[in-house]
Amino acid sequence: MHKPILFSFSLLLSLHSLNSQPLYTPRDIRQAYKNGTRSTDGRPGPRYWQNKGHYEITVSAMPPDRTIRGSESITYTNNSPDTLKVLVIRLTPNIHKPGMTRLFTVDPSYLTDGVSIDRYAENGRAKEWRNNPTDGTWKTVRLDAPLLPNDSVRLNFDWHYQVSLTSNREGMIDSTTFFLAYFYPRVAVYDDYNGWDRMDFTDLQEFYNDFNDYTLHVGAPRKFIVWATGQLQDPDSVLTPAYARKLAASMTGDDIISVATPAQIASGEVTAPHPVNTWTWSATDVTDMAFAISDHFAWDASSVVVDDATGRRSGVQSAYNDTAKDFHRMVEFGRHALDWLSHNWPGVPYPFPKTTIVQGFADMEYPMMVNDNTTTDPLFSRFVAEHEIAHSWFPFYMGINESRFAFMDEGWATTFERLIGGADLGNEKADEAYKEFRINSYTYDPSSEEDLPIITPADALKGIGYGNNAYGKASLAYLAVKDMLGDALFRKCLHAYMDRWHGKHPIPWDFFYSFNDASGKNLNWFWKNWFFSNNYLDIAIDKVEENTPKGTVVHIRNIGGFDIPFDIVEKFTDGSSVRSHHSSAVWEADPTQFLITLPMPSGKKLQTIQLDNGIYVDADASNNTWHAK
Image 1: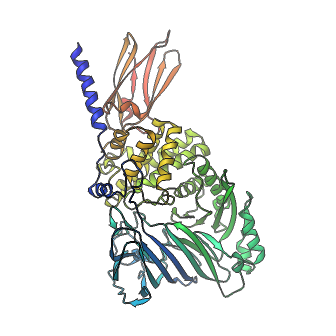
Image 2: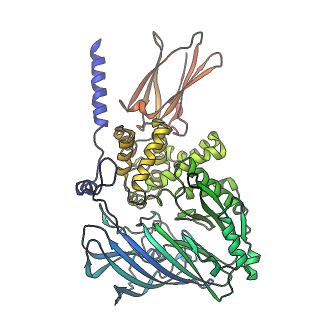
Image 3: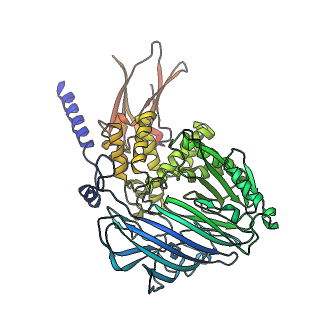
């Protein structure tokens, strides 16, 4: 009688010990711990460092001419302990060149000649730059003199390229409207665990950038408006007084102001009466700059209080074709997103002075900029805008390597998208939308790509393997740990992680160990189950024992393996029911099975027992219901 109990107890102890073991850690990350740049308590190590650049960029954009011409000065500081003999320069517009490695087929209208470097200098000395047809999206440059630790080098580039006719993340929206992103040569990230970032841009994976300081000058023809990352310097130099006053007023109140209509822009009354106006923008400690230019997009603006403690406001602007009905409400949607995300989840005040939502084609985020499609459904347009604005915290408040660890930003944006959706639509409708867009296609697809561990480097993935790991699966994990810890402790952990790594480059282990440290719990069993396994979503009622002395014993089997939260719904013959919630914690001791005794209410007769997984859509729900005989 006692042997099975002792064996079972011993097995549970063994499983618990196994689950609490250290996480798999790649060799390069282990070396970072040895070097003291990162710590196993989730904090930056005592020797943590990162490099930084100061960029002074001047660009000429003269639509409908598609040629963009630019010059820049970069002061790049080596804060690492290493002597750098080379620099890696990113040339992202080369993705448009024929023959580049792309994970999508492209139309001929997408193709251009890429970037041409017209002049290159190092510390004021001109150097030869060979524009090779085979140059990809990055190029290694050997320095004249090695760059020593704590020293800097000044680089100068003149370059030009053509805006692609096919607009995606960047390109031509229409003949006189461009969205320009990744438009300037930049120094790639050199970090403490991987060295130079030499990852090819394939038009699928996203980006990894240092926190830099930028001044951007955009020369544009009269009657053209420019919107960009950062704060517009001296608006009186590019706007006529009446319109400069309207823009200023939008930054101080809740009213939504029409800064300029297409008719007003066309009349010439909005911009300063110079053949070319130079719009100057500045931003500090940001990971990128982007800008849009148009001579006929409507311009709306307002602002919202994002930090109650200081009363700080952030601006919300939109730029759109007047025919896009949903964009007439886009400032309203943007204000709501900044307000809700700042005050609820993640609950950190929006960290930038403004955001601008531009009508384009990409549904893509940039620091302080969003490039979104127009749709006929304003609720869906709001949903997309909220997701892109949520990226302001991940990856732009945290300098995440989106290329390699996409789940560290897309997973969080998807989580916040669901949480704000509950406020927008009610939890029931938000759950249905979340399942429709993020979960159903994943859970009902039994292909092996779907079961790759979330921790799999994103640059090794494509298609559904990339998409579901980055978005839905990771989001389910974040929501599961929120459910398990409870809102108060989860908020404490999330804010500890964000505070520690704001303005820095966190990796997954920094996230895992920050949560362990801030919660005071060893959550390695949870991280291993969700992020390092080939699990999927599928639980089942294995058997039910009725009329035991203590009640009804339910045996639940975890077929898919993911430690998911679930509800048990008991229905009785009199039409009443009882629902009990069980967090992922029930799987800590044994991730394969869970036994629970349900007390039988007096005078009741059980009719059915059902497992309700909610958003954790079961791959096979046929075994989730038990019927009394």
